[in-house]
Amino acid sequence: MVPANRGETPEPPAAPRIPWRPQGLAAFGARLAAPRASVRPTAVVCYTFPAPAVPSRAPMAEPLQKIIASRYAGRNVPVALVLPDGGRVALSESADVEVVARTWQGLKALARPAMGALARAYVRNDIDFSGSARRVLDVAETLVGDVAHGHDSLTARVRLWRHQMRSNRANIQHHYDVSNTFYRLWLDERMVYSCAYFERDDATLDAAQLAKLDHICRKLRLAPGERFLDIGCGWGALILRAAEAFGVRATGITLSRNQFEHVKARIAALGLEGRVDVRLQDYLDLPEDELYDKIASVGMFEHVGLARFAKYFGKIRRVLAPGGFVLNHGITHNALHGQSLGSGIGEFVEEYVFPGGELTHVHRVIESMAAAGLEVVDAEALREHYARTLWHWTERLEANAEAARREAGEERFRVWRIYLAGSAHAFDRGWLSLWQVLAGKPLPGGGLPHPLTRRYMYP
Image (cartoon, rainbow, N blue to C red):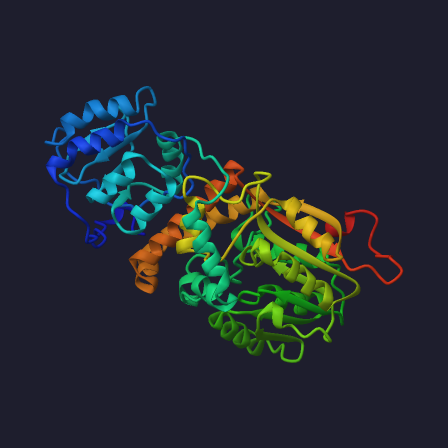
């Protein structure tokens, strides 16, 4: 993204939406003044653009002053609302963020703000924001209110069911097969698309991602000659690191063609043929006569869905050698019985980002592992680490905004910007968490040899 002091930033293409009609003002005012459910944002992001030169008392502004004064009385929200006709309504004497309603649809989204509706309006270019995504989310929290986490609507549950009925490959390709070039704009040098591990406050993203790879390898106590499987290997960072630094024979599986081709090329470039293998394969198709000493699943089980936990962990147990260990690293809800982030956030993610994905509380993960015959020996929460990771990604995407637009298009850029920033905010607020759960497959006699303390994880 080009900062404001480096020149003029071009306006994004206007969306083909219903234009503002003056006679709709009364209806808009009624909606704005109506009681609303309490919600808190997690999926609002912004587009940096020059502040439009508009009069503060445009035709729409005066009647809306009273409506908005009543709607946001006492909040002193540092926002100026810019209307489709150029009118500007300040919600504070010190407004430092502009919320631009480009169309009537944008005004509808702002009238009774729900986060899913605001996210869609941003993606469709019906609304825009000045400033960084991080700043706008802080402001929007005051503007909108609290999020009530709970259950999806019937429409959302039907959409989730439909997506889970199609193949895993289709859902994964929807998310990951954008382009490797697009992901390279904001991921670290190894292209690790999962929570990093910040051992120091001043750690760079590159350093934190390498630390995460080593943390996983140490937790699993990888040893030379062991057979290691990475389910959902992404762009191959973990299997390449495990082979090079820990001497294992590594296999990675993915359903993304782009990732598969990238990993094959990296294996050849590093001369690791015979030590590292990558397959375009669903975890359900893993042959059960081929056992692994250690298994990792990092940032993949969010795609599985609660109804498939038994198949997922059951398959892992069947391909894990007796006495072997598995580390499951994934996002969870912090609400004990929550099924979806509130205010339409979960529905937006299901529709635009993670079709077929589903989250649950960590106790359900541990319960499902135990039901499959895997004994949990360690669990670690990395919520703060993922918040930091996601803000790194958001800021890097914003810094490369023009290149990202050229590579993926305006709408997809907006989807990813709103998704990454909203997710970072959700982890900051404690709505989501990230857990690494380590479990083993007991030997026939019930034993499961492993260290008596956690010191081995921290050399």
